[in-house]
Each structure stands twice: as structure tokens, then as C-alpha cells.
Image (cartoon, rainbow, N blue to C red; front, side, top):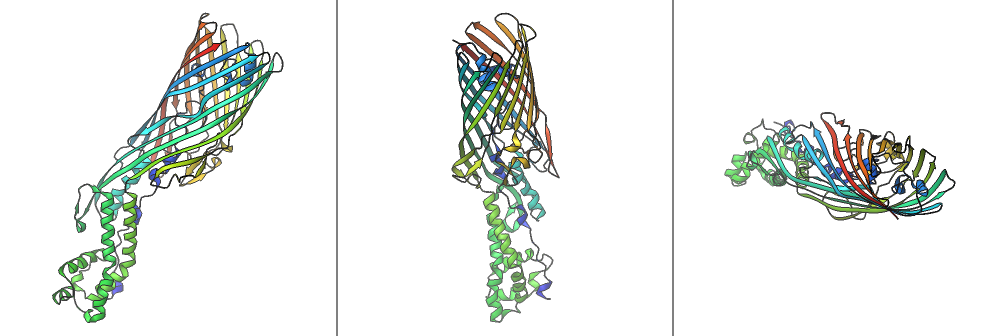
Length: 546
């Protein structure tokens, strides 16, 4: 029988080589608690906004952010606003990916401290303002059970091994990921009243970005049935299993070389039993050679072949054995414990201008914020997957923003308000990663995100004012942008609260904003994922007028 008639039976285990995608989406965790605003920008910047989100024509102290030109219509004196919000959000992901231990994943997000502060000095036609706010991010997300993108890589092991002829039905692992992101903004501006009706403003915001990523994936186990190496279906360490598999293939790749001296020395026509009886091979070597031949052709009994035929078959299979050895070593490394501990920081400047029109019963406010081109730099303590090279810089822009506001006072007790915002996402670069590489926003964003806000304020008495509002957001993110760890969803929010005028110089603002997210479904061919969230913000603020 000719050696060329033998057919090598490959286990095809290269297909289960685990990729870095277990961690790649971890990088995408950016502005994790955006309640109102764009993809990376927060606009929930005062307690007054939480009770009524249509603040774009505001003539209050928080106009320092929402309508800076309107500050020149304040009464002369010093004005101070101190605010904090308690923000909670629950992210829910449902997947139909086959073989997962669970199909639903949740990530709670919390920001118990979400402060903003504004100080304004008004004198004659000028107003000088300072402000501090979390212009992006502001909390931390913790995924104690990981996410589908993390678990899929482990869940694919049993099916891949079973398809390769090693029955495997279960897996387990230990994982936890936590990310936090905060964009602190310090701003200063000047407003000037051109006339009794028209005012203008100019200013800038200095933004400081601080992102933190910590996570691990460890103790991956599987339950293979592979008697050749003594595996009987019990849960065992995946790295140890693949290391033993690599050792087995290394031994098989060396058989041809081990038998070559016997062939060259005249033993080519001997059978394995004859070679053993004559002392050329040990019983252990014969058993190993015979057992390993099943990897070449399980239909042929090697005990019926001579040494030359066996050596030729092993020689033909050696390159494939070497490839399998490389694949098994790679799988052992990929299934080993992984950890990430990295921070990112960067700064940028956002210039802004504004115009305000103040009529007897109607106010208009216009503000434009220029894009801030920012790069954040990695400071990495540990990065087992190469996602955060120490010292590397990544784009993290803040997009341009245009806001338009209108307020109308039909009576002394009632004020109706409306606002429109658009974020110029397509012209910015958020450092979005897709298929393992960074892409520009225009590749994953179809149109700029926009918002409409409506609100009403009603003075019940000289001391109390009740407020209510509605905010709707339409994202422009495409399906390519969406992932289980970073997705942009359209929303609608209901707001309510009150203002209590404690004295002529002190106002207390209380508000609640409940945000509902429109679920989105992303199909990946053989399976799909549904992303949804729910959020709540409670706010308190105190305004002082001196």
C-alpha cells in the first residue's frame, strides 16, 4: 500500500483560536451616564433642567451654561448656583447567541455625585460668569457577569471542540469589568447687553477627561472527552487542556524523525511488533505510535503496516501536526487569565458664543459650541490583551453643539418654553473601534443627533413654582455603531419638580427626570442582540442672589 493513499484526519482546532475580542469592546466604554444630551455630551447641567429640560432661553443663573448671553439681563449683583444630581441607569442586553449560560446581561450605572456650579457677577451691561460641570460621562458601570461579547468567546469552545471530534458540552469562567468616565468642564464667559433687547456672549470651557478601565477574565474551564489524554468529561482548566494537546501534537510531529534511523538502518520492512521484539522500539513507543496513527487515518490498523509505511504517513502529516501544536499553544494562551488596568486622560478647549433676545413676554436664546479636538493618553499598569499600549493616544473629541431656545409668558404665573439641540457628531472623532480598528464617525453615524425639549413653569403662589417638561432625542448612530457595551439609543424623558423661594435671595430647586430608551436590535447573522436601558435622575439645587 502506498503512503500517498493515507488521508490525514485534521482536528481543525485552528478554528477555536480565541481572539482579543473578549476585551476589545471594553475600550468603547465612554460616557456611561449620559442622561440628556449627545453621544458623549451631557446637557443635564442644573437642577432647574431636571425639573424642566427646556432651559435654552433661560434668564436664570444656569443660563451660564444654557443661554450665556441671557446673563446680561440678570439684576445687578452676585449670583451663585450650587447643584447636584443622583443618577442611576440600568443597561439591559438580551442575546440569542447559541450556547451561552445566560441570554440576559445587566450593567447598573450610578453617579451619586453629579455636581454643577455657576457664579455670575452682573454690573450694568456686563455679566461675568464662571462654571463647573461634568460635561461628559460622570459615573461608573460594573458588569459583574460580563457581557455577551465577553462570554461568546468562551461559549464557542464546547461547540468547536465537539465539531473537531472532542465531545464537550460545558464551560465556566470568572469575569468582572468596571469602567468609569468623567469629563470635567471649567468655563468662563462674558456677556454684554447691546440694547434693551439684544445681548451677546463669548466664552470657553476647559475640559479634562479621565477614563478608568479595570477587568479580568480568568479560570476558564471546559469538560472535554478525550481518552487519549485521560479527559473523561469532568470540568478541567482550559489552558491546561490546550497545553497538553500541544504537547501531544509536538510528540506526533516528532515520530517521523524518530523512525527515520530505523528505516535507514534496514528496519523499513519490520512491523511495529517485530521492531519491539527486536529491541528497536519500547512497548510505550509502539503504543504511542499506534495510538497516534488514529490522527492520520482511523480506518487503518498501523499494526498491519511496516515501519517505512508508518514513517511515511507520519512524515506527510508532520506539517499539519506542527500547525495544530501552534494552534493549541495559542489557545492555551488565549484561555489563560487576562487582566486590564488602565486609565486615560486628556484635555481640550471648547469655545462658545451666544445671542439672547429679551422682549416683554418672549425670550430667544442661541448658543453655539465649537468642536474640541481631543486626544486622550493611556496610562497602563496591566494590559494582557494589548488594547491599551502605555503612552498611546486615542481621539476623543467633543462635538460641536447648536442650541435654540424660546420662552413665552402668557401671564405672570405661567411660562412656556421650548428648545432644540443638535450635536455635530459626524464632524467629530470619538475613537470608535469597529472590527478591531478605529473608524471615523462618518462611517458609523448616519446623521447628527438632535433633541427637542418642551416645558412649563407655573407659579402656584409667591413661594412655590411647579414645573414639568418633556425631552425627545433622536440618535443618528447606525447599526454598525451599536454594540453590547457601547450603544446610542433614541429616548424620551419626562421631567417634573418645583422651585421654592425661601427668601428674596435664596431659591431651592428640586427635580426628577425619568428617561425611557427605545430598544434597538442588531442582527449578527445567526443571532441577534437587543439593547435597552432605563434611567432616573434626582436633583437638588440652591440659587443665591446677592
